[in-house]
Length: 150
Ligand SMILES: [Zn+2]
Image (spheres, rainbow, N blue to C red):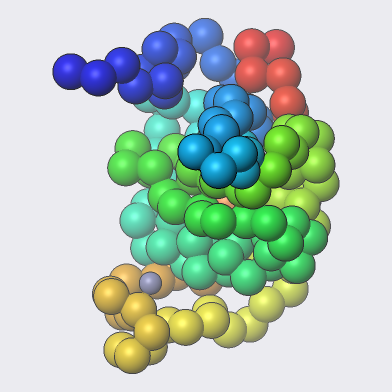
C-alpha cells in the first residue's frame, strides 16, 4: 500500500474548524500545486448531513473561485467532516481562509442552489440549502484557523 499523507494525520489531535495546508507537489513540467483540508466538523465527533455537504459543494465551487482563481478542485471528504481542495501554485492557508470566509458569507445570502438540476448534477434531489447555510454560519461563528493543533 502506498503511503497516503492524510492517513498520517492524527485525527484525535486536530481542532476543527481549520484549513490545513497538506503540502505542495511539483509536476514533471515544474508546475506546483497545493493541497488543503477544509475541515468543518471535529473528526469523530460529528458529521454533516450529505444533503448539506452536497449543497455546500455546489456553492463553494463558484464562490471560492471568485477569490481564488487557481482552484483545480474542491471535493467533499467521504467522512462528511469537510472538503479537500487543490489549487495551482504555492498558496498559504491564510489566503484560503480569506476566500472561505468570503464564500461562507455569500452562502448565507443565496436563495438558489446552482446547478441543482438533472442535467448538471448527479443527484439533484439530494440537496439542502437550509443545512448548507447552517454549516456555513457555524463555520463563520467558530472561525476557521490555520493552526490545526491549537
Ligand atoms: Zn451535485
